[in-house]
Image (cartoon, rainbow, N blue to C red):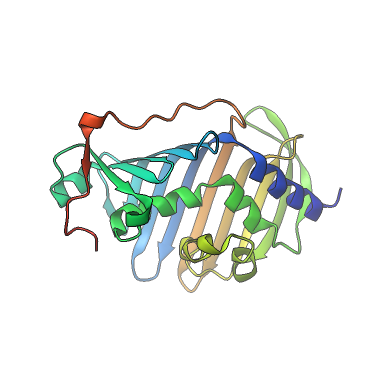
Length: 240
């Protein structure tokens, strides 16, 4: 099968996956804001309802890190966020803050974690690389003990972002830091699903270097909302 067909098939298959786990490291540099690093893992399920459990152990942006990291749990149209630093900053009284997705867009703090979820999203990331015109197979390699085929290529960001649903495009552009072309490497298992994905890009002092490992496809995951007595509302007046 041609490498480009493998990508198309991977995008189709990942869209049908109902659950997975991803471990990710994302390093970025920005000409004005300096360098940053995000490292963490995410559990994902699409059925019986959309649910995501995101743990970010390292969140370091422009030399400022978030002690204690971040937890975000998304269930249906509600997101629960636990950030020690945010708690103090916003005067929250409970460890978790609950926000409905319709309101989350008004809160820059909550929004940045939702954007992280999108960055770790298997279907989104695989769709982006289908825009590649130069992908080729570069051999067979083992990833976490599994045999995979390694594909390598580049994709233009503006074309790639258009592969996504309309409501995801703006956030994807922001995540990709207005980069022009991105080099990617994809390691696909015999089932056509990605086991590892690496993205590298740079433009005028901005760089992106992301590595994602995927496992546990269609295996049962347990994603629970935090206990009700641990959850408070987003304090009013903190939505900017």
